Amino acid sequence: MLAGAVLLIDGYDLFALGTVGPSLLQYDDWHVTPSTLGTLGSITALGMPVGSMLAGWMGDRYGRRRPLTLFLTLISAAMLLAALAPNLATFAVARALTGVGVGALAPLIAALVADHAPARRRVLCIAVVMAAIGVGGTVSAVMGRLLLPQTPFQWIFAVGALPLLLVPVVRRLLPASAGTGRAPRAERPRPLELLAPGQRRTTLVLWLATFMSFALIYSTSTWLPTVMMRSGYDLNSAMEFFIAFTLGAIVGSIGLSVLGDKGHLRAVTVGGFLVGAAALLALSTDQPRPLLLLLSALAGVGSMGTQSLVVACMAAHYPPALHATGMGFTLGLGRAGAIVGPMYLSAAVALFTSPKVGFYAFAVPAGLGALAVLLLARSQGRDTTEAATCAGPEQLRQVT
Image (cartoon, rainbow, N blue to C red; front, side):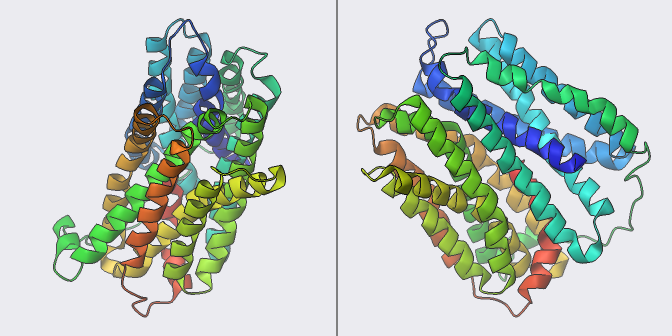
């Protein structure tokens, strides 16, 4: 429950910028433009790898409790700073610090769940806890639906400071020494082996798929409500569609993982990307409201729900001796997509006048992600359930 609460905070803080995007664009004091909004999204993403690497080092050196306490405090302070920011520069600093906190919490919770979950249900426990990120995004959208535009957008960030109340709970429930034990390290191959003749194609294709997955997630989480308002929807409708998007991400993340465990992992992953691309394109057309809500949910399935399958593909296509190196480098390089995605959307919106261009731009990384996974070799004979088990702890790094 504690792990789920922390990742709910993670999701709320991550999606908060997308929730307030339309309000920021209408805030005359700061003169925010679509390009500025994309830059703010990229600044948030830029802090995530810093937080992830720092938290991983601290978690091994000092145990789980101390860094978890530190980064919960940091992310609460950053959200409070965003709420009180007197100018856009201070707000940008707050979002950078939020990115550090968001990046740090996920690997710490990954280690915590791996420490305490039963071995036979570890992947299921991780998937359920990971779904809390989507729940946090839903809470953010619901808050936006209830408060905006009649309430200043700063209140959305002020709510994000409440996790400070969890710090005493963490200190009470977690022993100071939790997680300090170290397993013997196996000999690791050199990273250059990822580009050896037998692995080069797999590595390059997985790098592309992971980059596109991150670009899709972070562009939609930052821009979807704004793009829908540009297409003629009012703010309340845009928030409702965003809620459906995050709910679809929650269900899709677990549901697609179950399908992937049953075999045909590559086909399920390609299908997930294509579902997302088709749903995002269909959102640009006039449809009955219930169908638009369903399409928003399917767009969530195709973005966040599909990324866990991309991680499972890494385990299925790298030999055991290259699992850690392959996943580490692929996820690390793929995080560049989290930085490029929001900037790419802001450029598309700024360069083209059509209100539907945002939906077309969303569909591009989804389609390219499907193409990349399609280029992977078919199953190399390893059991997909075993592959998913190997990938389980790494799946938690997909949001950082």
